[in-house]
Amino acid sequence: MTFADPAVPSPTGPEESVVRFLAEDGSFTPSPAAEPYRELVDRLSDADLEGFYRDMAVIRAFDVQATNLQRQGQLALWPPSFGQEAAQVGSARAARPQDHLFPSYREHVVARIRGVDPVDIIRLMRGLTHGGWDPTDPKNGNTHIYTLVLGAQTLHATGFGMGLVFDGRCGTGDLDRDEAVIVYYGDGASSQGDVHEAMVFAASYRTPEVFFLQNNQWAISVPVATQSRAPLYKRGEGYGMPSIPVDGNDVIASWAVTRVALDEARSGLGPRAIEAMTYRMGAHTTSDDPTKYRTSDEEESWRRRDPIARLATYLRAQGASDAFFADVDAEAKAVADDVRTRTNALGGIEADSMFTHVYSEQHPVVEEQRRWLADYEASFQGGAA
Image (cartoon, rainbow, N blue to C red; front, side, top):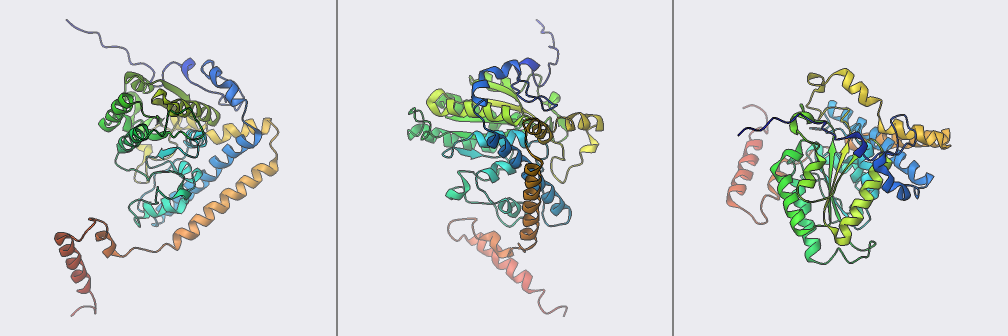
């Protein structure tokens, strides 16, 4: 018996299934799949939409500044979020204050929206800290630390969600008290075993969790069409969780879909999955050269779908003033300048600090290594013999 090889479908699925409110030209043109969210979106005020724009524009200025700092030797590495701002802003603004957010490693605006100082992200990428910030500090808005181990954060989020179930901190019917979890990961990470194991446990224990997949089309140099022969959002459906594809370059759609998914999850209905179709306009990290595997035509086609330009066009049509855009530009420049100033003032780190938090108590092997390093450094004191 043989089985025919199925044709490779569109990696983003049928166009009519994608939730979208803003067309590429910035016009308000809801897709058929967006209609269930229309009433919710109608409640957004002009101030809400202008806030979305401000979030995206400011973080892009920060992102460009951080990339420049890495090129100038101030950071060991930088993962740009250029082009993915709408998916991140919409989803982060959809979360309620009591929710817990588990980022991957390029959710810079998610962290900033929740209260994390952007320089704490810089400190991590400079090698001055292992975590960046304290997720238990209330000022950081329940934002857990970046996870560079691909996909591992989905396990962390699911475990946390299971704890919320066991402790009765969800499913009571009080949306202002019940807690939920959202975890961010990319199309490349979606192929990791950790992600699939996390979905198994999330579905089994009905965790109050949203799996937020940012499909930026490339897992470093591997295109999404190679990674999967079916739309990625269908993977969530395979584990029994409702899964929704959304235009990740439309901040309104990202907000609406995430808001509903989080509230459904927190109310006891179990986990949800969202696939936000977006594009990584920059490199995977500053150690990557996307010109080796992407065409300029492809990049230009996505540049025309820029999430910031799209929302700007819509806001101008709604009457947003030149003064508003000038004010946003001024804030973006001020934030970028502040980050540069504070980064240059960070300095280095004492080599001895690498031994401090390896174990909770002193360990003979670690102490031996500490002594060896101290003796080695001391051998350079006083110059050549």
